[in-house]
Image (spheres, rainbow, N blue to C red):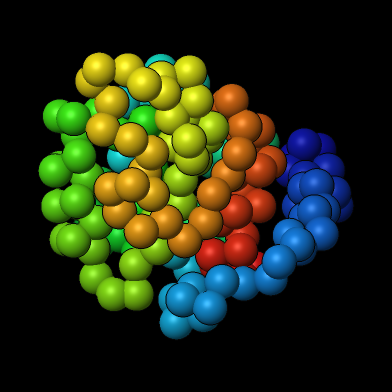
Length: 160
């Protein structure tokens, strides 16, 4: 019983939330009511950004405490986190994925490759940056971006 008593006396221990991100809540995100269902789309990246997105949702950074939750279907999603330069084979699937999302939908370009093609610029299989294929509402720079930056972008979406 000593352990249970100690747990009860200690209570819940967590790191305090970082300050609210600069820039405030996106205008389109105000309709989401403080929570966002997120669909991740790899449009042709090296997988570095996906690892950082996974880190943003792990217990250390815990993006879910700010109202962001990963979903498997674009029909359930409010936000598309798109990584990598858009390849020719992924241009149409990306358009269809974003079109399948309900309004208000937001697209977040994660990483330098998604913003301006990064190392892949000028490649024969590259269609272009995410903004060349679908409208982008928010960008997260970095190669790869820190999990804190991804969480800060999601906090701008959820307003928490």
